[in-house]
Image (cartoon, rainbow, N blue to C red; front, side, top):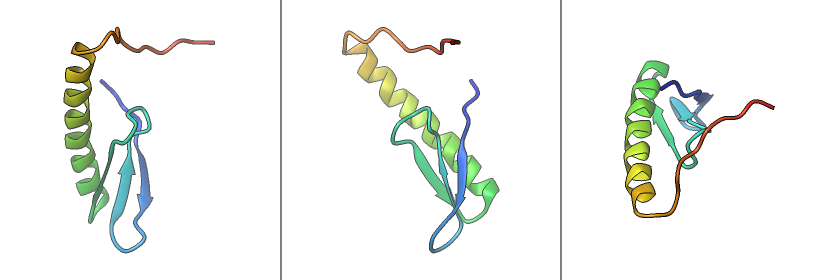
Length: 67
């Protein structure tokens, strides 16, 4: 899947990166390349947690709609 990420300059060092499609999914890195690599791992981790939560709830899924 393709996820849009937002990269910001960190306050103290490096770069902070967010995935708005997944609430709470953030990471960082000393370089942009490292931040991107780290957010990929964070996205995978967040999705695996969400998958477990979805299986134990009445949640069916999510989707995008065009308006």
